[in-house]
Length: 435
Image: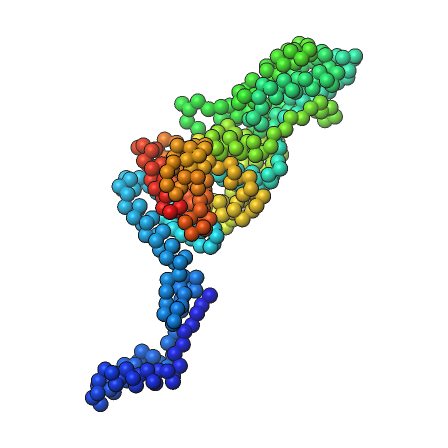
């Protein structure tokens, strides 16, 4: 809103005359002062253009609004943090946005590309929620083909993987029980794993060879690639005998579904974000891939889906790379601006925010932030995803400022010798944002 404050010619004449009389009683001096006033006030009008959000008027005088006062104080304190010695030898990407006001609060090197570490999970989760919504379920199916001869299945049992990382041995026991209840006591065929949901790569692109990472397979039990052997054992325990012939293949059309095990996307999100579980993040990454192309899904399919969302929110997707869903890869590069744009988009989409926000770690309370920001204004206030790989520490999420406004932020520290230095700096920034 633009405010224009005018002084009329009449007021100028009276004011000019009074001021001239006060300044001098000499004729020459009067003429000189009148000439100066005419230069300063052409046509008898003075205009002042101000931002109405930042200024208020009281008795004709300009006063700084509470919001402007808060904003300037925030920027002053953040500027002071930019003198931290850590930033003399490391890189920083930072952006803070006021979601309530719809205004940029602060930024520093916000477009510089850096490795995301586990804040990559923010991009993965928002993309998946944007694609599927919060009611999406991970599914693992048990099917059969062939014919029944009494209680003997003359055919194969198929285990169709949906890359559900939450499946436990107890879940497998339920699946075996359902096979027995279906009327099968003996399988005269093979136990077949349908892994066609994704490609055959077992590790992410750009993962370090000396990391001890989980295998990326659509059929898991307790996060291990042991589904068929555990299922075969459970079948025997439930009274189903089989010849223990394992195979891989795609379930043929016309098969009968005996049982479908489901788990909600929220269950995956909780561990993926709170505990920063990389396998859970990769399972979501491949859900994106599976929904973006014909099977099998590939990492490039998921990356393409994330880039389409980057374009949708108004940034150039060619400026970023997304090699995996967890942030383990050496090949992924993002910026603070990108992360904040995603957080803003999620905040504006209730179908995303309602599932993302409860899954984020809470400062001083739970998840990977349980032992950080245990005192001060940030405790219990900051809800954010952490990230740590060698040389990199990151944090991105939401908090509430002292004026009640909701903020989102992204802090990327790179080139660190000690990750704790980055975490300490991020905690200082968060305290400023919340204070």
